[in-house]
Image (tube, rainbow, N blue to C red; front, side, top):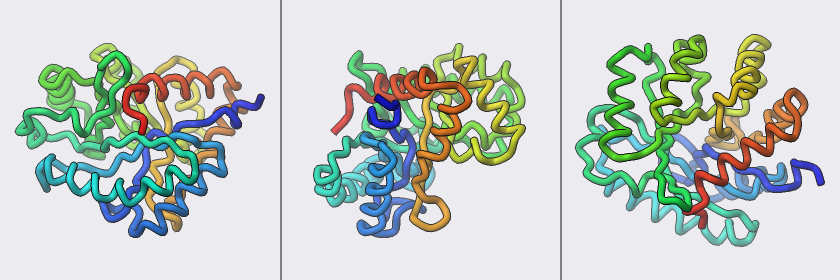
Length: 246
């Protein structure tokens, strides 16, 4: 059986409508889901942006619930499993929240994982590392750093990635980054080989300029590193979300 037919996980999406700068309507959300199904994706992590300096977690969770309830019938019709989570921007405002488990993913062992976004200009200074460490220590979560290819300082310094993994972090890339230049592609593939990238996603936002194109990137990964790597990435994702699929 082809690995592409075994069911894939899109770990990072903005498909929930009217939540952020992602899908603008339920109709667009449905189009995005159909496109993913056509590419062999059977599990979709719904990760709308959560900016703790803009709204409370309670407000965010309430809005997310309403949007998700509208999308559920489409998921059932298409046979898609959902994971309801967030892409949370890490700054000091987040630490005003006592319990962040409602915006996390959790596995069957009860470990919690938070898809975590950092400022794009982050230099991964001691201050940044300390803030990530505080997130881990305060909430006993594993941060999954979103789209690490967007942080030049991080991608250029393997030692920082190793340091963060040793602290308890995982790394996510957008599959589209494997199509954005020879040198970036080569470096990311090397990081896959070294087990420094753990999960992938489309980070899809709409049906215009940020479509849910999963297949193009995963085929590059498959062609370059084989079925075994694609299976490993899928297994990583399924382990993380094993306790929270809907």
